[in-house]
Length: 317
Image (cartoon, rainbow, N blue to C red; front, side, top):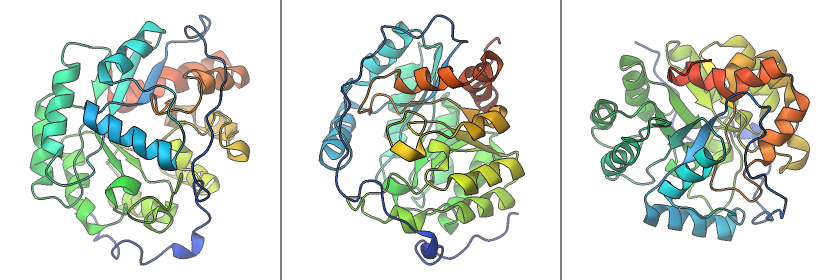
C-alpha cells in the first residue's frame, strides 16, 4: 500500500505561490494566420490534449473563458472538433474531459464512449470527481466501456494531488493499468475558480504521488506551468512522470513559452498537445513553432511516439 497522503488541500506549500496568469482578467485573442493542414514534412502527429464535452458543457466552458480566460477562437462542438483536426492531417486524437460536480461522471463517460466508438483515430479518457461515492466503480465501468486513461483537473474539481481522496483513484488506475492525465500545474490560475490553484497545486505534491504510486503512469499538462524548473527536475528523476507541451510552447504566455530543454533532455517523456478547441490563436500555432526548433527524430518522438507509448495506442511508427 502507498503511504498515507498529506494534509487536506491549502494547508501547505503556500509559500511557493506566485501571481496567477489570469489575475488581471482575461487574456487577448490573437488574429494570427492558420494553416489549411499540417506541414507535409512533419512526422505523424498525435494531438494528446483535445477537449470533448457534451454541447451544454462546452457552451458553459466557453462562457467562462470569455469572461475570465481568453476568447475561444474555435467554438466547435464535439463531432466538429474531431472532424476539424482529422481533416487537417492529425493522425490520432486523445480526447479529455472532466466532471465539475458529483453525480455526472458516469453519464459523461457513457457519452464519451458512444461518441468515439466508431472512430478508431480517437482515444477517449474517463473522468470522475475525486471523493464522490463509488469513484473506483465509476472508473472500472468506464474502462470496460472502452475508455483509456483518466483526466482530472485540480483547478476545476478543487482537489490537491496529495489529497487523501485521491488514493482510490490512483489505486484504480494502477489496478487497471490505465494512465492518468492531471492538470496539477498551478497555472493558469484565476480568481474566478472556486478554489485557489496556487495553494492546491505544487510540484512537491506531485512528487508525493510519484513516490507513493511508482507504477502509476502520470502526465501533467502544460509542462507543469509555471514550476518549470521543478518539473524538469521531477521528469529527470521519475520515469513514471510524463508532461505535455499544451499551450506553453505556443509563445502565447510570453517569457514562459520557450521550454525546449524538456524536449531536448527527455523527448520520450514529453508529448504534444493543443487544448483544442479552447484556443485564443490558430490551431497549428504551437506545432509550427515547435517544428522550427527541433530535428526530425526528436519531433517524431514528441509528436507521436511518446503519446503512442503512454496510452498504448498501437500506432505503427
